[in-house]
Length: 629
Image 1 (cartoon, rainbow, N blue to C red):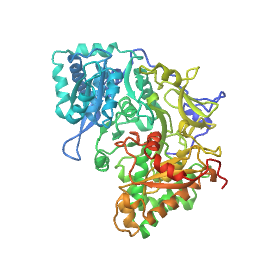
Image 2: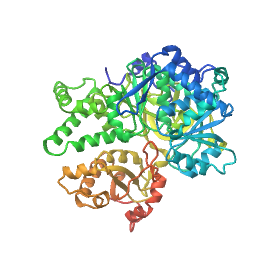
Image 3: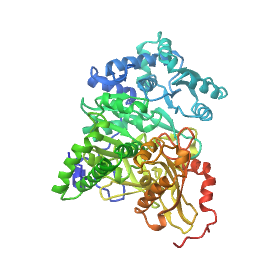
């Protein structure tokens, strides 16, 4: 398979136009779902197409085994749960919350909620009582199904004063059985009537933005969004999503739109969907399930690379790994040139494949061919590494407000360093101040109960303001520079996109997270957290005694290694944009402490507030005027 970028003419033949004259980039095939199309319709269509073939594999209690469930059998179970929801007295259009980890039951509940004409409202398991109260109140949620009895108690306490009754069930306390029992008197005709009454503009789900600032907003997504994106997706990614050999193992949280969209794509396509909630068993699950493509956020792909580097140890083995990594990157870069890889480079690539690449590819399972990366910028280095490794990396871009991908590199059009051309019935343009604006099938209708935020989110001519800065090249491929609100302006007036520095510095095995600061200050600085998982191996590799993160944060050899990593990072930017000072923190940024989003992006405002004293120490005694050096 060729992974070189296509020309404008090639793109047009494939169904994509080149960038059009008005500066926008658009998908070529116009499509509007029919009035009766909905998520239940999509499930019915899958059953009609391949009802006796497996749709989903359920992880058995016995480790390492999977029970495949056909589309028809799954549809029958969905209907029973939907009947139970109706039997519980839930009226069409009412909202049901799911506060559970990624699993077969999550998928089952989501489909049953839609089948009963209800609206699903995902809630992260890590949500605080205050957040649960806000979501339950704002969305008028009537039932919440939690993962555990402990979460159920949290929800009951949080919703006691919301102004309406909220029923709470727990999966580990037979929630599914309880729901099904409530539907014993509800016939299939009643369930069908609910499904058939759904219209394409009706609400499918309300997803609250995890966000990096402020109170979460309820993004109202319609069945038009939920059907339109998968309908196009299985056609644009036909080589990835069609065929009985297609397998996807989801491990990212289904409360996040990224995993949720891929679940819908799996339903609309072919092959088998699996779920695993416990990332500690991810590597064994990848081996036993054998996905054909892997869905990941950049931080996961970064950690795989860093783990491989750390496990190489030192001496000859470490030199071998780093030589192979360099070969992978050079080989991938050469694929983008007219002449392609040289004979010598192809020979080195074959040798590196035998000695190193096969082992790393094997970590993703025996069938992995593609990686879909989203939820944040991947960066050129990692993109070329994985493509050079023999895995086609398809980096994409999307938001909660677009129910997943706005653009994506496909298996037949691929440019490392971009997030691809717009797909799935979406159009994109760049505003005069560099902001990416979107319209199309995936774009949400409104923020729930928030007309002011909705009005602010759209331009006068109806384009959604994404808040991201970027550009379109001559073929309509999108490059993301960073978040508009994250742009740092130094005291000297220099605009700095922190993501470029943060992404490169996170490539060091010792580094977990990075926060680049310097808005209004004379120079750029960074807060760095250490990766507690990688630290022991790094210490062994460097002949150091075991120590914890707190001790390592001030150890001279650790600081020297980070200083060298900062120097390498600074090569990518001008001196005015480079990191002049850094501090190593003794605590990491996590979802639990509220400093990371579920897609593992740093919540900048919260992190800066939490570590305000450390930031102030960096700039203590410096002038606020521009620094001359």
